[in-house]
Each structure stands twice: as C-alpha cells, then as structure tokens.
Length: 65
Image (cartoon, rainbow, N blue to C red; front, top):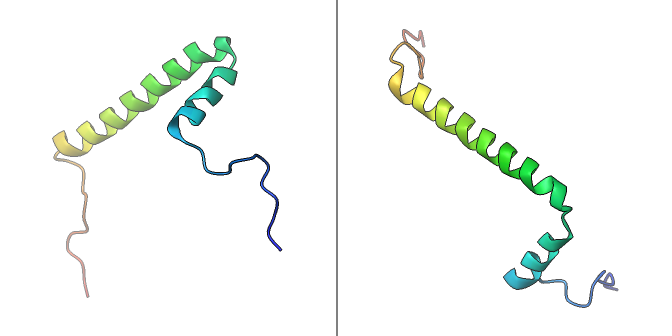
C-alpha cells in the first residue's frame, strides 16, 4: 500500500519549481532581497573576522592530555 501523492507528479523539474515562485506575493520580494543581502553580509563579516583577526583562538592551546 503506497501513499497517494498530493499532485500528479511528485518529482518536480526546475521549470515547475520556478512557476511556484509566481505565487509569492509581490510585496514580499523586496523583503526577501534585503534579508538575502543581510545574510550574505553577515557571512562575509564572520569569514573575514576569522581570517583577519589574529587574536581569535580557533583551536585549543596548552592542552593537558
């Protein structure tokens, strides 16, 4: 006994997934862009901090086994 799929075709192609983007309300698109930019900038800032700042300890030192 297999479960009945919700749609005719359970596997979606890329074009089918792109069509579902049209159902997003247009007033949410600028919000998505701003949040995307903020998340990207946060990732860049964290990566840069880890690479540039030599004061940060990224591994344990003086461990006693």
